[in-house]
Image (cartoon, helix red, strand yellow):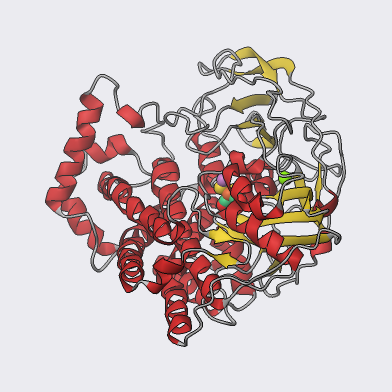
Length: 587
Ligand code: NFE
Ligand code: MG
């Protein structure tokens, strides 16, 4: 008999995400449903606003990819108005983007996803001397793994364990679960890197603030270019960015890279992380210019795992539909014509597995009807996975030399075939590779900025005029840390007439479409075997590998700012299994 398991909320993500799966008598997932239970939003409030203000408003969609929507909003308007920004502005924006990527991916791997791989309790029982030596197996010059440092890490974390609140912020984990594969010493190495990464990410955040004036939500982009002229022309500010960049990039290579190599060594034998990818189609868009002709990522689509060729993107084939989303407009509609009219139809009564392994009465998703606030984006009617795995897969298919260099090194260092990328482990490794692209090659964008200024081209903004008698439309398409992001704007009478964002987590976390085709999260879960139905860490590992951001994926409120409804998630009374991976980071 099929059993329904509810994981709600998925913690250690941004926003509120609920996963429901059906499992058969062998504990294998036969069907899966991904639902955003959060409703907020921005698309509507920018309507009738001055297009020059849009970037500042849409950046509030998210405080995680804090720069992405800002840049997207500004660039969409520039595209609509036909503005070409000066080279110095292009490279400054690239440096801000690099700052974001380094910060965002490192925080995700260590602080949001790391404890899916690293068993903290086991780390406390490790031999620090042995662990310190072991670190040299994965890195020539390991960092934060001296014997004394590791002993201090154990002491620090043990103090949590002995405190009133159990393991403190690490409480409620599924530590000891049989799918944790690291040895105690390997766990200790990752735990030490987890703590060290708290310091390093602070420096990455400061990198953003150098040109952006603050972080989160930098302030120095404007339609036409950038406003941080003094910072670009001040050698000490430029030097400060470079010093911090080198410090963070060094950590990416000595800790993040080597931890992924170590994870690959042991987790390739864990079946639950060697699946977790079934959508088979990948969409990526060029991003982060490093010189006049090259970007770190490539544009294109890979269909059906076929990395022998890259399919060019036709933007007119991008649509969003709401067949299974709580909106009226079922679509599919191109984003220029997209609508966002709410139509909340609620949950149904049913039964799901409780935390004690017994069936309990629950509120369940109406899976044959509408069940999520996220829409279903499609390309040419097909679901796509977006994100770092797409960056790597499309980059390899397109012959991108930088992607090829980092991916080939990792495959050599791990001994894994390229097919291993199509998995949860592969997705987590790909995020590190995307981070490493910025760590290894971001310096080229810095040098391009320096060369531009040295050449005497100190222009930072392109002048422009908005003709109120004209209608404009334009878009931004690019890649942000969770994948392809696009913003689509129509301008009429000098104000925004329509605005639509099609966001990475919308591509990945969206529900099925009118043809019954699942979104990427849903696809990834089908076929998964769960060891213990009351501790479904395998589900959490797969979903976390996408780095969900539901604040980004759902971005709508009542146009007047009115409260539309209240949604409370109580995992116990809803009979749901708390994901039990610490406190929710949902806002
Ligand atoms: Ni809120 Fe975001 C990124 C965007 S989401 S994190 O990256 O856009 O999918
Ligand atoms: Mg949208």
